[in-house]
Image (cartoon, rainbow, N blue to C red; front, side, top):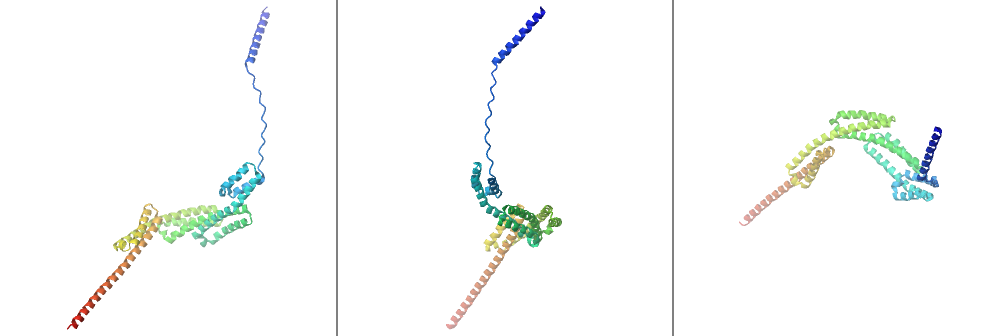
Amino acid sequence: MKKRLLFISMLTVLSALFLVMCISCKSTPAAPATPPPSPARPAAPAPDRGVQEARQKAMDFEAPAYFPSEWEAAEAQYGAEEWESATKAYDDLFQAALPLYAQAREDEIMAIREEIKASGLADAFPEYLKPIDDIALEAYTQYEAQDYYGAKETAAKAMEEYSTLLVGAKTYQARREIIDRGFLQYDQDNFERADEVATQAKTQYESGDKAGAVESAEEALLRYNLVLSNGWASYATERRTTAAKEKEFALEEKANIASRSIFREADVLFNQAEEDYARENFRNAGLHYIDAEARFAVARKDTDEKRIIAEDAIRLAEEKVEASSETATEAERIIEGGSR
């Protein structure tokens, strides 16, 4: 009997579970069907190799910078996959940009070379400049032979060599200015140390250690510039004193009246020097003081010459007056004698 009841209970539970599952299945919506995959879009065709080369060549010689609007038009054709017309556009841009690019590189080389020449280094050490000039000439030869990439690379090498030598040229020029202006007396310690480092730079350069030579030359240049700064400060102070005295002498001699225009020119220069001195621009101050002093001296000389001329005129006038008086006296005597 118990077994029968147990069986019935189990059957009832199973029936209930079945009923619940059926209800759940009816209330839950069916999952949507997975949509079929979209058809793959065809990949854009790769640019033609010829157009890629033409485009790169035009970029390498800075066509976008020289012809921006034309470059945009060529880029539009490239984006529209018009390979043939884009290739021609890039080739035309390359041909148009090429002489401009070459001229720009030549101008850069000539400018830095002239700066080296102006320093006096090339005259003192011509053996330093000639090998670099040979590199620059090689670049020109390559350009004439239409080896444009070779010329581009060689010109860049020449610029690098000129730039290295320029550091030495500036160092040489600073040293020469110190000696020419007599500034050695103002900072001999820095000058001697600069000479030691400059000699080291020369040795490094000649041995092929260009990087080391530049580093040493820059240190020497820094020390030479310190000597120049100290020298100009002291020199400007000295010139200020002498220019002020010359102005004082000119005022005492009334040059501001007798030679007004020259005195004014000198005074403008002196005032400019005073402004530079106050701003600690001692180089300009020193040069303006020198010019002012010279103009004050000219004003004094001009005043002195005018004074001499005036004195001569007064003397001649007095002589004429005296002569006239003697003539009048003689005439009076003759008249008086004749009337007797």
